[in-house]
Length: 450
Length: 99
Image (tube, rainbow over all chains, first blue to last red; front, side):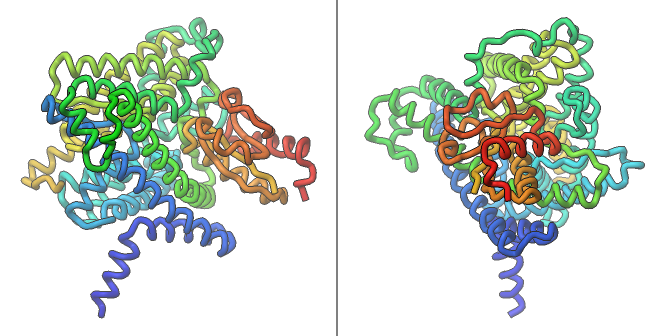
């Protein structure tokens, strides 16, 4: 009897992400004194969002995995895609395979909650911690908390409580320290009182410090120069994703050759035996992968709004003096030309990196993603241009694109995932954090958990 | 009822915060509104049923053509500026929606 009640509570309710997220959102609404009917509607939407996200990411990981298998069969090269959300879900899939369906996401959500509370505690103790910012970018928080959970579990092989606690401490420190570092420079760019809380914060700070040494922010401010408007379409997230998928898939198909393409066509899940024309098949794959990402994003959007509403409300109530850390795109309107500049030079850096991987016969190849390429380099370019002009932005973004590829390749090597987060911080400081956990794990003789 | 759409680059971060503020502002000023958010790349699929789009000048220029009223403000997370932009747009184009 007791066992079945425990099973119901722990595994079937608090261990199931679609119910857990609904409960959190419901409590958030009630705590903010909203009507019960509104709370139920919000909870239901959050629940549906979790399932939609799972549909998108499940299909994406499976379909993209086929391409990577073909690449591996033909060349022996291990491939991985760079994108934030599927990295989290790929980690969860590995945890679920050992710990049971739904466990990964449930642990990840607990890490998210504990890390958010810790962030608030750090700010409450700002006299000692000097942390003043609360990280409120829900869409990035979910991914980062999830990846931290997977890192800790993979290398330390601990149970839920210690895994969640360790992952939450590391994540909350990253959020608090890095977004606090950006308060000053963000204020200089926007004149407003908020800070950037995203996934390239360390490199933003480096750009802020290094850019003045490279260029002249007065003379070379890109915002005062003219750029062709035809470049704007590159900022359309869906079109750009489709474009990157098309180019990457075309390269993979050229590399793997006819036999593997024929295998792909009839591979389980793809089932496109009828598309015998290779170009049509190529277009079908790139559009399908993009569609999978669009589904994933719309799922995330359904629960992230509800979650952020609660977090923002709680933070404003408990810590009215805290600086809100928000999505990097909030500063894009202040420097729209830097955004395009960052995208172009970041892409240049990533291309150099990818060519480098091929030339130096790296055992790993990466497929770039729109989120790490665009949002990171755009944000870094804004900081670099503001404090060092466009030449500094060009140099720093090219270097960053290169580092994103090389650092991510290292991360893929250690994490053995078919996806990696790929953004600037996850190709630098987080690679170091992974190496530290890996080192601790092997020092203590702990086998890799999965 | 007024259909309001909040638009930003990826339709995740900024537009979500904007949606939260817009809902709050509408509640406070008794504007009966349904608020949604998306990226400008997805705006095409929502904009035909939208009365009022709230976004920054950067994205406003790239929205697909529609009959929706476009209201823009630079700092989408500055509640005071968003309030002013939203209220003046509603007063100008949808005066009947304010109760």
